[in-house]
Image (cartoon, rainbow, N blue to C red; front, side, top):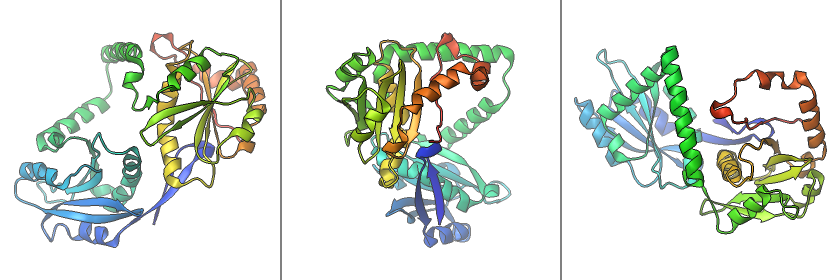
Length: 341
């Protein structure tokens, strides 16, 4: 049994996945049985053997044949990449179609480490992430590997400057497109609420945010203006809360201990996208957002404001942040702190 931790800080979530013994046996005997690929799927939090593909002398043809192992749902495909010396090397293909449900994407993303461990480090080559069948091409895979190798080498000063210029252009382009670039979108009516919140309207100083089954961000105005006032209004399932308090913007990710593991994973995975939707609705696009992760309403107290004031007022506390170079374009950083309540 392998234990995987999902998330960071106090909002860490966990789940158990069991690698079925049939998968382990198939991996160990693949060479003797002339198996090229093994398809693995998740069933009831177990990683089970779904299908195998026989090897031929032509790796190019075998790679293209991997398309037959795919479907509309994500899966993991372990490919035996025997080299010229016939040494056992394994490639882990993570098949994740764009139309896959977000829960399925998260389950398979969190299960890759288990399969990697079963393959053992000396024999594991790399992950290969694909979402369309035309990517299941040996030449495309080799090109991807070469590009990754090229990207990992040290850059010259001129190359580094060129990269920064391209990053600035991409950032400017993304800002102009706004929410269209975000993986999840705002539900009808949510944008109006968030724009009102972003303008610091007195009647909308706190909002509850959640992601529905259609993977849209829902927003609801809460009648409170302090963290302690938020406590009795918090749901007993994972949620996000944005609050203006002491002229600061706080973003709480609440993940109750007794929440279902899938909901915990979904909340942690989509947090950055939810924040992205919130940021494009702010009147000040450079507004700092202090992120706080909590496990119960009792963790949300008015002392969070005092902690923020103390950190701003103490040079030693901010020395690490000040030493970091500013992002391109002079934009402010989004500050994230873990609080031990």
